[in-house]
Image 1 (cartoon, helix red, strand yellow):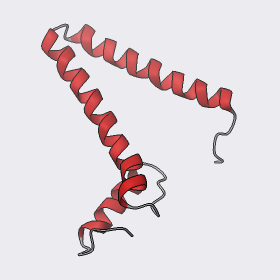
Image 2: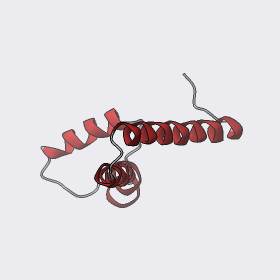
Image 3: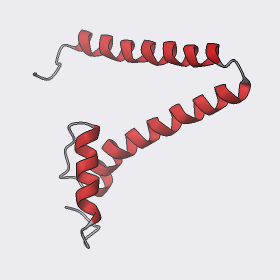
Length: 91
């Protein structure tokens, strides 16, 4: 499968992800309409967004400029491979 290059399709894809997240969140809140559930859901979404940002942007731009990601499984392999290294610097 080739990379998506058409800007319109990229925007559409982003919009669909947003819609999916909104629908899923609304479904959770409809199933359990409590303030605590809404707050926990918001915290979970925020924390996962920050983890995603760390996994791809922070690692690539601050810790290992040579790292290029291909997805979450690629990041997990990368992170697991670094655990056994004594060198915690670049590369």
